[in-house]
Length: 385
Image (cartoon, rainbow, N blue to C red; front, side):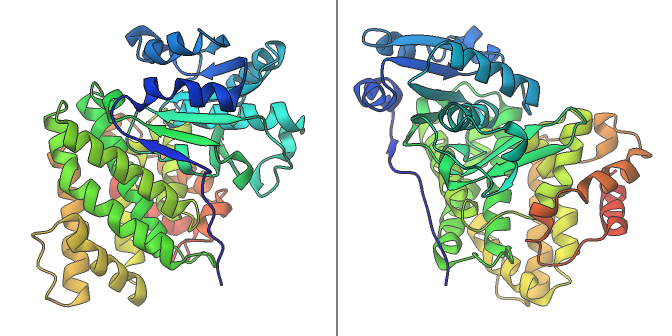
């Protein structure tokens, strides 16, 4: 038995973000609260969308979302959205903006105490109408029931509830054309992590639909990530990355991620390293740790040819699995991503603190195919340092 849930509607295609204005207004109403960031404001990326919405709706823009958004940012957005008497929320941007938009819509609709929403299925609802438009190909947040916020003590906490799935997700590949190569690379690896962890998760709700979506996601992502990074205006590669990211999001929305994310969160929370890069840093070492588990080794071997089509999968599971892990490590280097903690000026002595912090991510660690103790997390961080 398993449950599978998804967002109500999805639109994919070039210029869909500007052409769906009537549909957005029908969902969000007359007072639309837009959640985005300053970088997109400077680029003017959301202006074509907002200008069309302004013809029939009142718009309030909140653009103070930072990478790995803080609880204070969420509360400030909620306060302004409430004063605006928002009828609906539009999240426009990367995972951070969409995560804030999800929780603003939840808090506006439910008036629930923010301290009671964290964890799995603790949100009571309802929320007000919500539309999400991603501008990166990595988080899959536009189709997931998850929002991650950084607390005052730098710990990352998540809300996991189908209540925060949007009414509509709009995927417009043209919005990703100007993503810098480093962000394209790190968010692309992030999407791969989502698919890999969803496929191998030991969560009781791991299911054949998520496994199928994981495989399809890795086909699109593996075949296109290099082109998207080094030829950013290739619209086919950009489309494949955005589509693959969405598929991976739908996979881990129902078969939750595990130790890669649990160990990535302290890197991001303590040292302001982007979520995608944090994932890419620990991915190979966590996979090596997990591959001691026989069934997981087989699962990794099964996934290998979908990411690297030239990888010889006729050999033993152990050889194919090891080649897969080595190829993922080489891919990060080829994409010019940092692959050691020391390259990011993270001190070696921080490995113990990060290991301790990672153990707080019980929501994620329970899904890992091999139990991770604090000493294991420490050794993984040391191997990456």
